[in-house]
Image (cartoon, rainbow, N blue to C red; front, side, top):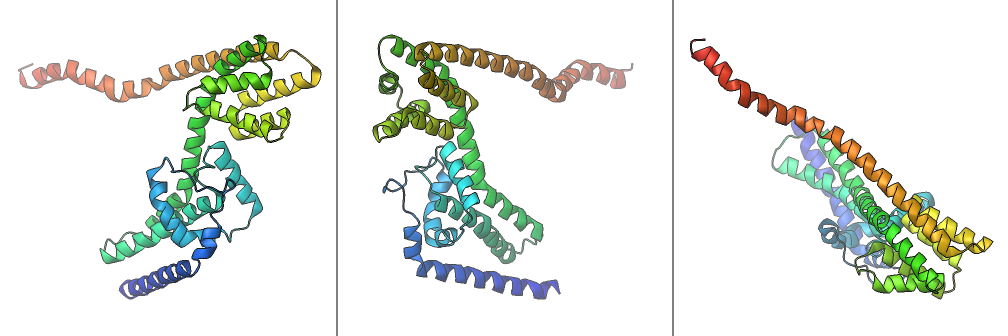
Length: 300
């Protein structure tokens, strides 16, 4: 029964693959339209080699199916994930969905074909796991990029806040202080790029409050939210923004010191695991093994 079922499964998989291939060839224009970007430019090169290698396959085979997914809540969630992870210049929502379809559907199909061709006799649950892992891979990449990005922003924020306070005390307005910091910051600074985006938003007509709130949404960090709230409140109440920035910087440095203390306490506890599992057994073997061997074979 099993030997009769395998050829039928292979024929079915081959038919599905042929359908997707023919559909992709007939839907190139629709896929090309799905790659429209807000800026009108082509996406920048991805930092992930796997995404860069998969992009042509997405454009060829899965992008036309991704555009048919119309769930607004899901699309909004993916768009927010791309914004907070800084991937909006590399991927749009349709490409992100296309990657999920490619890795979540194509990988199990390839694995099934290889399983049949090489007679590996893997259970069907293996292919389900491969499909689930492939489906979640774009989300994992976005999550990792978001974590790295937020960590970099947290490390830079107190120093940037201090510089803004000094620039304001020196006579610059808030926008001029940001401009001075952006010009002197490193080219690889994520926070400098975000502040530069704030300046562009203000230049294009957004109010300072709206531009700062957009910064808060892009960073999705409690520290940035607090800074934005106090700056917006200072504008509304007329409080000196230099004093607000200095107080906020001191609070950020205190929070960073508390986080460092907590991380140090956790590190001292985590080191116990490799100590007990690896180091202590090796020490016991080095100390007691000669005694045990002498007791067993040396005549006691």
